[in-house]
Length: 331
Image 1 (cartoon, one colour):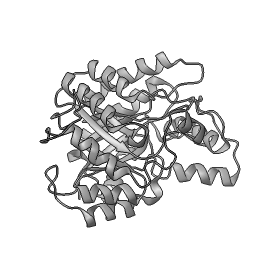
Image 2 (cartoon, helix red, strand yellow):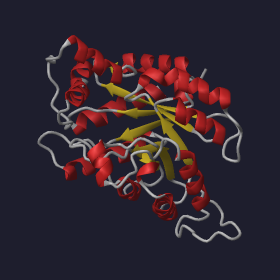
Image 3 (cartoon, helix red, strand yellow):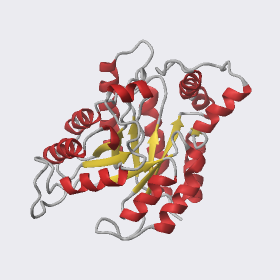
Image 4 (cartoon, helix red, strand yellow):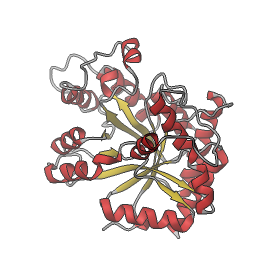
C-alpha cells in the first residue's frame, strides 16, 4: 500500500468567492495558494470549470491556468477539469497548446463530460444537451489528434497545439470515465471531493479494465478529496461549516458564495444527510487527525496521488490548512 510520505499531493482550486469579497480577491488568493503549495512541494495545481455559479470564479479555466502558471515557476498547472462537450476539441487544443508552449512541461489537461452548469447555462453556451453521453469518446479522439503529431492528409491542424502532447487525464464521479480511461490507457482522477459514493467501484473498474498505452503502462489513479486542517480538531470542525453551508445552499437552490463559519447549522436531518453525501470523504481535524485520516484513505483506496480541496472562509485559514497537511506529509 502507498505511504503518505511517498504519495504526491496536489491542489484543486475552484477560486471560491467569499461573501463580502470580490472576484479579484479570489484570483489574488489563488495565486498566493499556488505559490505557497509550490514551495511546500505539491505536484499539481488544478482549476475546475464551472459556469454561472455565484461562488466560483474559475469559469474561464484556461485563462486562469495561464495566470497561475505565470505566477509560479515549476508546479504543474492544469484543469480539473475542462468539460470537453462544452467546447470544440480544436479550441481546447489551441488553448492548451498555447499554454504548453508558454509553460513547457508544466500543463495538464484534465477532461470531464458534465456540463458544469444548469440547463439554462448550457443553452447559453450553445451546448448540445445530449453532448457527452454518446460522443465523448469521439471528442476525446479528435482532441488527441489535434495535440499529437500531424498525420498525412490532415486538413485541420491546431496551431498552437499540434505536436505538444499535452498530458490528458480523464475525470469522473462514476464508472463511465473510469472505464474509458482504462480502455484508452489514460490516467484517471475521481471526484471524491463532492461525489464519494462511487469511489471504490470506479477505482476497481479502472484498474481491472486498464489497457497499457503509449501514455501509461499501468493504471494511475488520483483521487480528489476535501481536507480541512487546523491547529486543533475543534477549530477544523468549526471552519468546515463554511463548506457545509455551501452544500446546504446548493441543496436548497440558494447562492454558493463562501459564508463565515458558524457554531451550529440550522438544517433538517434530511438536509444534513444530503450534505454528508457530498462531503463523505472529507478529512477534517488537527494535525494528528488529518495525518491519520490521509493514511487511512490511502490504505482504503491505494490511490497513486491525492488532490486536496480546502474550502474555508478566510484565505489565511486555507493557507494554514495546506501548511499543516505538508507538515503531516513530510513529518
